Image (cartoon, rainbow, N blue to C red; front, side):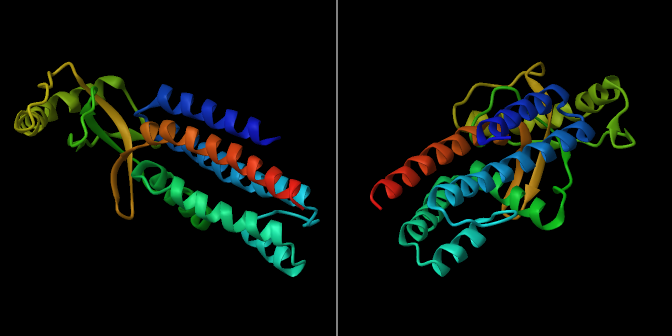
Length: 227
């Protein structure tokens, strides 16, 4: 499976996340698949670099293994690529949502799972400083039992949530949120990233990944051309 297919898989998993949101069981399953595809995409960048620079690394390739082999062979262009990629990768992950996905990927690599998912309500039309509110719904084997139970819990939390969010919006002269403009979604916390919506972050991240792949290929070609 090539890089394009792995990115396509991310897009497929994103659609499934959106389809099943806010059921934590299915979102957890498809977000795990999404994260694996992200990690595999970056691994494949170095598979391509290994091939193009002729380092002949055998087995599973990581940036660390690539860099070590490049230094061992004193391949200055391969070393330059690894250094360039680190800098570019860090730049692309400075913003909160890409940084969130990066931290989730790192967490998954270390623990083979993602942090616990929670269900929260939010305004369907987002504004920057909107609040979200966690809701507790009874689950059966990790799955939502009935949509009616979710709707009941949303209605129970709605008055307080609307009061708080509209107070904040009023202070900023932003549009008022109505009771029919509230939806439930799945969220995660990791390190300093609190209440991050999974589907939203995943959607924002795909162009970041595509850009890194495209620019990595350009950089490899540039360095090989000047050998």
